Image (cartoon, rainbow, N blue to C red; front, side, top):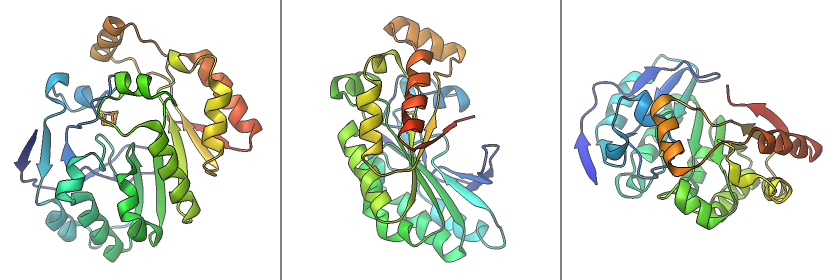
Length: 243
Ligand code: SF4
């Protein structure tokens, strides 16, 4: 479900490390990940999180705001900029064009191979792309990230971005219990994309999220996280923690 809205501002200051401005063309996210803390951060009911607000004028606003600023613009800091709405509305693509003209650095974070549609633009810009991969198992992905592209498509996108010379990383987070015992295969799959970096994250247990995960019987796994960190470093991948 989409709802078209107008935004007053395109950019907002970001407190995230390495990101100066946040840009979110969409409000809410169709991917509907069970571990998402976006609803809590934006004070949105989780049941309404998949109703996507399309900020239809965001590229026009951005064109006015992007002049005379410097730094890195994070595209998709609380929602996925390449969720399915992007296929139809192309707002992330329009914003990329604006940012390219302004010569600004970008940091894209997504779970979607739709990002490949804009590879020509991205490859010509300064910046990086993070692709989230939390499992190799389609059934687990259907449960935990019901609206997102399946893991193989994300790995393929990560490989294609890397091959095109884009600075990429795999965002492995949150590390859930489902990765226990599968760490080696998982790290092999990430390493095979050619990316040289991994950003790893534990399950961030905010109150509402914690209740939701408890109801589903899903927990994070520090043991799996530490094993993945070790294996990735052994494979020559630079590993950092998300925060
Ligand atoms: S892709 Fe990100 S923003 Fe979208 S539901 Fe999943 S965790 Fe939340």
